Amino acid sequence: MPKGDIVRVSPDKLSFRTSGAIHDIYTDRQANMVKTGWTEASIRSNPFVNTHIMPDRHLHAARRRLLSNAFSEGAMKNLENYVVDRIRDWCNYIAEAPEQNQTKIDGEKDELSGWSKARDMGIWSTLLTVDVLGELCFGSSFDAMKNGHTFVMDLLLSSSKLNNIIAFLPIRNLIFPLIRTPAILFVTSNETLKHRFEYREKITGLVEKRFALEKSNNAEKAAGEQRRDFFHYLLHAKDPQTGAQFQSKDLVGEGSLLVGAGSDTSSTAMSACFFYLMRWPRAFKKLQDEVRSAFQHVEEIRHGPKLAGLLYLRACIDEAMRLSPPVPGLLDRKILPGGAVVDDHSLPEGVVVGVPIYAIHHSEKYFPRPFEFSPERWIAGVGIGVNTGPGSSPVTPEAVELAKAAFHPFSSGPRGCIGKNMAYMELLIAVGRAAWLFDIRLKHGDRTGEGRPGGEPGRERVGEYQLRDWLISGREGPVLEFRRREVET
Ligand code: HEM
Image 1 (tube, rainbow, N blue to C red):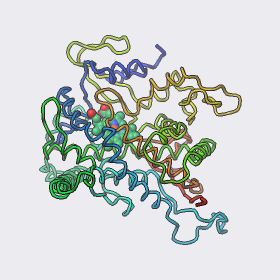
Image 2: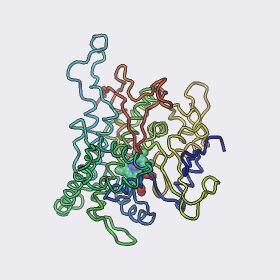
Image 3: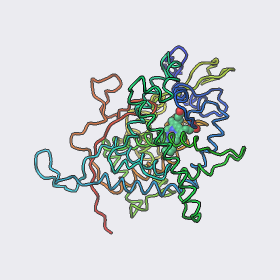
Image 4: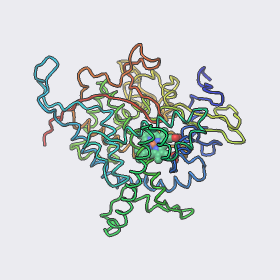
């Protein structure tokens, strides 16, 4: 095994960087391990349980069976209408004209007028995904795009950061019970805790409203006219094995989870994708050519086989998630009594293991020239290889398979992302429509999101979109301008 593929990061924790370890720790349904770390912090400091944080494998499997009703292909078809509506709004918002005629740095009028206000995609991608989730979960948008801001975004990041800090403190067992109830606010004025409790109250209110809507409005309507969003499916879900159903308190937990798990992750993937496309103009041009030649009208860009067939679009999204994975870190798993074998190493009970997603996504063994944005690496047989320069060899099917085995942005197996298909639906439609509709450029001189030479170790690459790992990701930029292309109608 190459040096550095197993690192002992703390006395009881081993970090692996191989596709074999991905299989043994995450993908294998029989892996003799449970979730720990961030998950433990979350479950012990939170009165609402949800699918993501349930450590018990059997209870989790039952809960996930119920949740999966909202993610079936049939459900996706109905959810798509809500997603497309919000993406249409988003395209209009990001293309808004500036207040007055935009001027160039040198004071002259921009001879290519028609460029939009500058938009920070670190923010605008989240405004979109938060509004999509509000719509899908509670039947009402959070009005994030309308207000240009959302409390959800700040709360998710600060709450996730707090969990991440507490999860690994030696005195964590003393802290968990303290931060579980609002009584803690009498002794500390911590803003994050305060917002966490406010958020729970808000979600509880939204769930109650959505319950009422289902009972009154939906029940009276003909099947074809009913609102079929996430909560419609969750309220009607029944476990085929036990007949169990979600209770309203369960749905508060699941609602908070879906907004949290589905918004910041997808928006990091989206903003990373724009970051790299703006720095690799050849790739952006290729993407625009692909999308514009496949569709005559923007409204044709919808979920389905035609969009899924755009290999370069999908490759751009995957390549951005490889370079800057929305969940970048190591997802801890603790070995249960009886031990486990990881990548041919026998390990005893109690050892914590995992594969850091960022680290394996940058392993040269799987991804030649690992810091280069090269969507071509995902498409076997294309004329241009990983090195997009002339004379490079075509990508082989074997190279694509090797890369796929080490590509792990959604994790995998029984605890892998249940929202993966929904995430791809949203990303393909949003990035596809933006590439079809707009010419896009970086705001003049914008460097937001870049690394800085001579900066913190590991953060010196100018061309790398910088993430801060708090389970989900803190990030900023890029700041972009959009201009509608002229299309003959
Ligand atoms: C690019 C977008 C996304 C990425 C990269 C992503 C990534 C992940 C990862 C790595 C996990 C495993 C976490 C762990 O082991 O602790 C996960 C779990 C989960 N994700 Fe996603 N996710 C994305 C989008 C979504 C969306 C759109 C939804 C739903 C609206 C969603 C819902 C969930 C849920 C419910 C879980 C918990 C599953 C379980 O524990 O059974 N995710 N996601």
